[in-house]
Amino acid sequence: MSHIFGPVPSRRLGLSLGIDLIPSKTCTYNCMYCEVGKTTCHTIDVKPYVPANEIAEELKIALSKTRPDTITLAGSGEPMLNSEIDRIIADIKEQTGIKTALLTNGSLLWREEMIRKILAVDIILPTFSTVFEETYMAIHRPCAGLNVSRLISGLYDLRKRYKGLIFLEIVLLSGMNDTEKEIEGLKKIIDEISPDRVQLNTIIRPPSDSRAAPVEMARMEQIKDYFGEKAEIIAYPALEKKCTEYGSEGISVVDMAKRRPVRLKDIAAALQMSDADTERLVKGLLMKGEITEKKHEGEIFYVSK
Image (cartoon, rainbow, N blue to C red; front, side):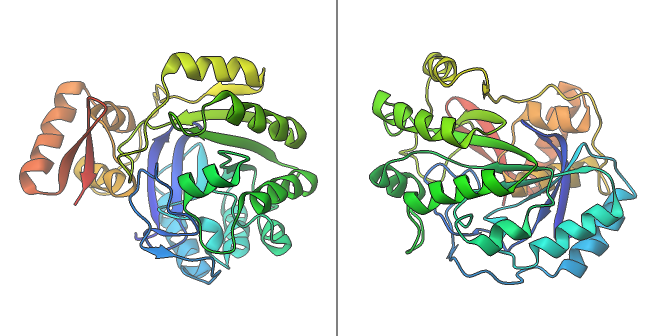
C-alpha cells in the first residue's frame, strides 16, 4: 500500500493508522525543524494529488488487518493541499467508527473553502509557533503569499466554525521562539483562540536544518506553567498494544522509517518486541541496506534509504 502507513505509535493519538494524502515533501512550508526532510515541492496549489478512491480501497485492506486508536490524515507534507480531502474524510467515516485526526501546519486555514472541507474530522492538530512575522519566516520559510497574519486569522476562523477538538501544537526552538517576548505574544493569541489543548513540542528527531535546536526541559516546564492548565508537554507514550505488521516486522520498521526517524525504543513499542529482538531486527535491516543510522542529540535514529 502506497498511501496507508502504520499503525505507528503517536505521541498524541495512541496507535495511529496514517494516511498520506500527498507526494513526499509537498508542502506550503519548508520548516527548519521538519523531521521528514527539506521540502522538494514548495507550493500552495491545491490539487487531487492522491485520488480519494485509491485511499478508500487501501483503507479497506488496512482495516481488515488492524484496529488503530486513530486514523490520521498526515504524511510527509501538508495534507490540506489535497483537494479531495473532504471526500477522503467522508470515505473514512463510511468505513469505520474510529476517530479521525488531521495534522496540519494551519497555513491554508485562512481560505474559507478549506475549513469547510475538514469540518467532519474529530480532532484537528494545527501548528502555531509565533506571532511575529520575522520569526515565522525564519522558522517556517513559507511559500509566497503566506504570512503570520493569515495563519492567525485562519486559526480564529477554525475555532468559530469547527465543533470538534483543537489540539494546538507549539513547536519551540531554542533561541528563536522561546524568549519572554515570543511566549507572551503566543499566550495572548492562544487565550483568544481557546483551543482544547496546548501541546508543547520541541526538536526530538533530527531536523532538516541543523541550526534548529531543542529547548531544555526546564524551560519547557516554565512555558507550560505560564500557558496554564490546558498546556502539556507531549512525550513518547508507553504503548502496550501491538501494531499489525504488513508482511513482517522488518517491513513495518522500514515503513515507519520512511515517514520519520525512529529509535530502537519506538520500534520496540510499536511491535511489542523485547529490546534484544528489536536490536537483532534492526541490525539485519542495516546489513541489508534497508535503513541507515542518524545521530541527533546523543541518540541514534533510523531512517529509510
